Length: 299
View (cartoon, rainbow, N blue to C red):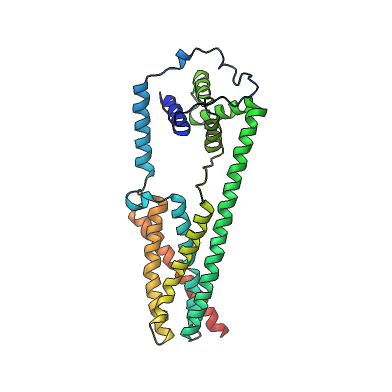
C-alpha cells in the first residue's frame, strides 16, 4: 500500500486535483499494458490513502522542518545568508587586522569600508549569476522532458519505471502501469515528476536571482562591518585591534555553532556544534593573524 500512498500523494500534490489530456498527441498507446485495463482494477480505498498520505506528510514534516523561527525561512535563503556571513566574518576581519598594523585608524576604516562595498557587490553578483544559471538549467531540463513526450513517449515510460524501481525493486508491473496511468492524467505532473525525482531538480522560487543577490551581499556586508565597529570608538588603533579580535572571536564561535545547528539539523550533538564553532573561530583567527604579520613584515 506504500506505492499507493506515494502515487496519490505525488499526483495530488502536483496536479491539485486537476486533470488534462495525456501528452501523447498522436493518440498512440503510451505504455504496453495500460490500454484495456479496467478502471475498476485501479480503484483503491479512499480512507486508507488519506490516512497513509497524512502519515507520510506528518513524518516528512517532523524530520525535515526546523523548529521555531528558522523553520519558517526558505532553506535556500538560509544557505545564501550562511555563505555571505562566512566570507563576511573572515575576509574583512583579516583585512582590517592587517591594516591595523600600519597604526592609522582612519586607514583601517577607509580600507575596510572599501573592501566591504566591493566585496558585497561582488558576492551579490556571484549569487545572482549562480541563481540565474540554476533557473536556466531547470527550464532547459523541463523543456527537454516535454519534447521527449512527443518524440519518444516509450522512453519516458521507462524513465518513470526506473525511478520507481530505485525506490523499491519489488514493485510489480501492474503497480508501475497504474502509477504511469495516473500521472498521464496531467502532463505537467509527469514532467514535474521526471525533473524532480529523475533529475533531482527543484523549481527555483520566483525572483530567486534578486533574493539570492541581496541576501548574500547583505550578509557579507553585515558580517564584515562587525570587526570595523571598535575602530570608531577608540583613540589608538592597537586598542581597536584588541577589541576587534575579542569581538570577532566571540562572533565567529557563535556563528560556527549556529551554522552547525542549521546545516546538520537538530540531531547534531552539542560536541559537534562546539567543534564546528571552534573550527570557525580558528580559521578566522588564522586569516587575521596571517594578514597582520604579512603587512607588518612588508611595512
